[in-house]
Amino acid sequence: MSKHTFSVLTSDLRRDPSILQGIEQELGARPGYVTSVTITEHGPVTTVTAVAA
Image (tube, rainbow, N blue to C red; front, side, top):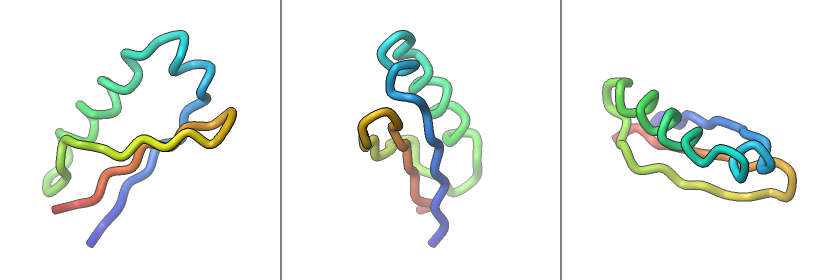
């Protein structure tokens, strides 16, 4: 199993939610990765994680 994680400033996501769409497109282009992601906010930093199928 393989995992890929992006970290994004929460303030940037609030300002421009389309950042998540870009991350989903990036993950969708990688072989074996699912297009659904887990998003977890940790105060000032938000992590976006996908696991390879």
